[in-house]
Length: 309
Image (cartoon, rainbow, N blue to C red; front, side):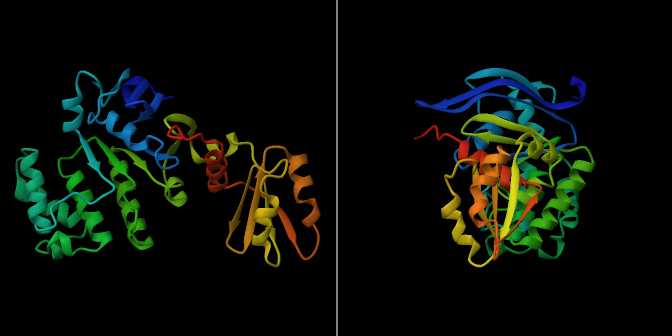
């Protein structure tokens, strides 16, 4: 791991409970400056709570560490001033124009050169021609651009994105990620929660959180390799019906349709091959393939234990 001086985030043993629900359990992570770290996990796994503790919006019940060089317990106000936070739900004023929303954000942060900063943000994200359009009239993709412009207007060192592209079309998602990589290239550290595997693969590293616990951590390649999965790709007439036939068989840890095919995975090669043996003949065709991040994600979800159950 990079030396402590270059770590944007270095926290250990974070815990947070709401009532009798232990939402985040002994969470520790280090993230170097200028890196994009993706947070994956089932809904309700504590991803949002973790993000909010890291940026000073929530105080952990226990744990220690620093964010941007500031103590997460004693210096949360300094952290918040240098952090941009983009929530899953559009949270700007829909009855204000794009420019008015950004001008309001600039005033909240007490920024100088407000007009110039707003103009620069509009130009960078392609919003100049829409500056007088009401935010409430924007499509999901344009609202996303506005939210990103607002979250980065004060030139933060850390950007937290909570499922930022939910409900946005593929072209807008790709444009958004191009901008995120451009920002990271300038030194901005980014933490992003997502359910999209293609987005996770665009992160420099990922952290999989399962109901408050950190289960897997590293690059996508590291996480896939660490799962030790053997995966077979099956094709044939109505092959999707085999999902129910194979589910629960010894050796089968995950089975899921992939378009007109199925992916069957497990960590015990011998048992897995025995499970698919009855169908390993024409008209079906089976090919061993490299497991995907989605295969690993499904496996980890299957192992997750809901702490609200």
